[in-house]
Length: 261
Image 1: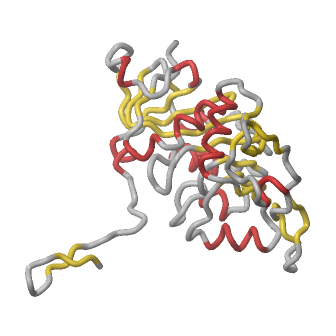
Image 2 (image 1 turned 45 degrees about the vertical axis):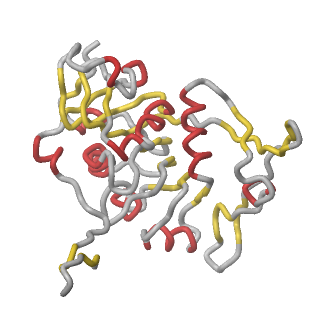
């Protein structure tokens, strides 16, 4: 039952070339940076990644993206990642963009053993009708477009069929975890980490604080250990290494009020 591994390199050692990965995180919150760095140092490439976004500020998945290790991304947000946009438009990267809530449910459904589900999100758009550019040809044309999806009416409302997602591996980060793999996530890091963890056939969790079995209140556990195969305890330095994507500073004004800059 002890799922703790000694090093990040050991944790990702069997992730092969061309593997599919579900990766947790929301912006810079809850991103498994240590495991991603270990994967980068291992040299694994050709990866198909499922994640809300693909890293930012040269951290997270941006490390693998910049190195040309990612072949396909399924996600919801490109944001300010200029290298992501460049590779996509240049035809170097295949990208499936889907609604954020749909992505969350596709991950959860895959982990729960649900092969597909119907949702109203995307009905009447290219999400359902097909034609979204998955890959460009580098000349401004579309080399590969999304196929149409089944649309069905229930009680007078149309819904589009979306498939659950299962991946070979999942990489997640938790605030706390025990040796059995039970995990607790902090605030925004709970958005996608539990769902990504559920979707992976082999889930690897880096935890900021490792505790012994029985120390976590069962009612406080966000993800039970049955979904987790490996646990990596971070050093205090690794756990404290967190970035701020957009820093806002309060500036006093002449009238004593506070302005944001």
